[in-house]
Image (cartoon, rainbow, N blue to C red; front, side, top):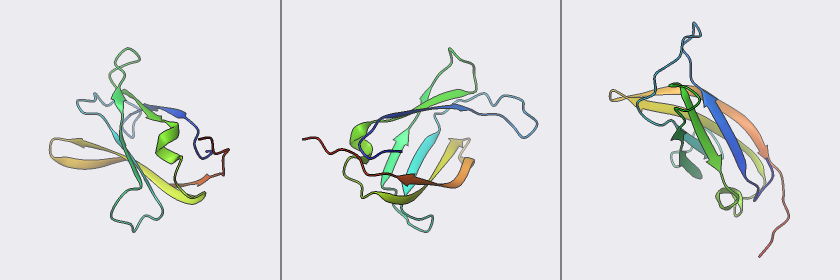
Length: 104
């Protein structure tokens, strides 16, 4: 991902056997410098996308979310909070934030 750019992630949430998860809450997307960090650098709530199906959500990472972050390695995860429990959809995964053109 390039610093200061916009990215759209479409999440299709399924059980281990491939059957759809009927989403009743929007998944949460977090970016951290390390997985041991308590506070997320970026915390975004997705939007449910029922037009695609009951198990779809969309996360928009707009340019302002990463504009002031230092380029480097980060981790992200996605989880769902339903029925009082926090269920991981995507465990901590690494990505690199590349330097971008800084516009005023």
